Amino acid sequence: MSLREKINDMVGTNSDKLYSRIYDWLMLLMIGIGIYPLMFRNTNTVFYLMDLVSGICFLIDYVLRWITADLRSKRKPLAAFLIYPFTPMAIVDLLSILPTFTVLDSTFKVARVSRLLKIMRVLKVIRYFEPLEIILAVIRRQSKILCTVLSLAVFYVFVTALIMFNAELEVNPETGELVFENFFEAFYWSACTLTTVGYGDFYPISETGRVISIISAIVGIAIIALPSGIMTAGYMDELNQRRRQKDAERQAQDAASDV
Image (cartoon, rainbow, N blue to C red; front, side):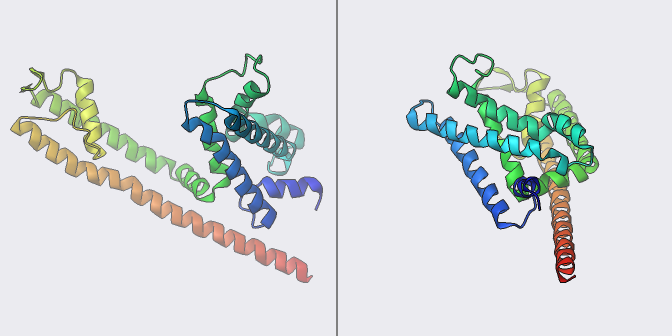
């Protein structure tokens, strides 16, 4: 195995090699170090060093993935190298690296972006944390069904909001104004009711409105439960498929070693 192949195996996903596991945990640690300063308003030397160390590690990781992009792609080597910087996760990596330039050189105006840009580092966890990667794979595989459920939920929220907006015409005694001054407030109430959040800033006070609210809450629970069942079933299928794939790879390696 060449050096580039070993690097690709190390930075790649779903590898059972010990050095690959160590690399994944190291990068997760760097992500934590890079995010930790965002939990505070003030800055100090320790936070400066944390940002610097994590940024350098992210840069090294980006370069390693770029120079081995052809080994993970079905395209020709040159095309793989050219396309890699424009792939979604490569863009996330680049955006998480940019804030470090403000640490290395305060005169680098282009990369002087808000602290919000550093939050992109959270998305890097997807690459090193297999359960999140599996969830994304399930979402991609079940995208049509999930979009259908989402469309149903949005339609239900709209219809419920429309009914409530026209049914709840009482004046709130605490404010002296209508419970729902505009349709957006009714839509907001409907979304909170569907998701069982219930902030309580908007609520019906008439008997008719309360009956509508009860029906909306009951039906909303059923709609919210749909994607949960889809994701659970898809997650188990994806997990079993990956296990079978790993078992097949192990058997192939054992057979090759016996020969």
